[in-house]
Image 1 (tube, one colour):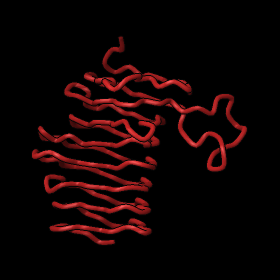
Image 2 (tube, helix red, strand yellow):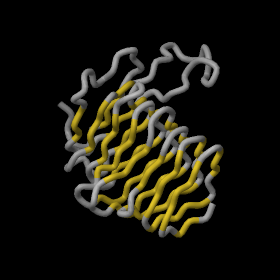
Image 3 (cartoon, helix red, strand yellow):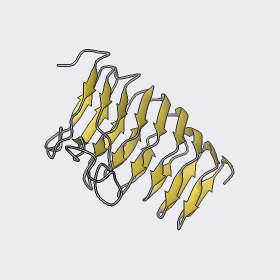
Length: 193
């Protein structure tokens, strides 16, 4: 069992670190590091890795107590699978999403950084009735739908949105993004494209 403050290094593997549908519940501060993604093939660094697999996590929940945790270099899902954020001060950087990222704000959360991720087949979704403040979504690539509800406040900048719909409501700053073949639906924002 990991202790609060530990760093977990996940190795490349053809097998998921979270078999089944229950997933992993993180309830302490952890840094989770994987080997990265696009390690082989036409979009990657062909023949540069001994093991070109990713570190796959199907479902992971950042629950109360996991404040100040970081997850980086991991593949989330394979067409399904979810990374749930249920607490404040979480950093999600440089991950590959074939699943969904979901900010579950049934309780107020703040200081969430979503940066340098590649969202491929699923979406980014924020739902719930409590507030989310100091949310930063920057330097990501989205190939599917994107939704933030009225209770979200933050900055959405320097992202690439390629296809799908972009739905965001509330008080968000939306600027310096690239939108290709997408539909924007927005209301009550300080938005600049």
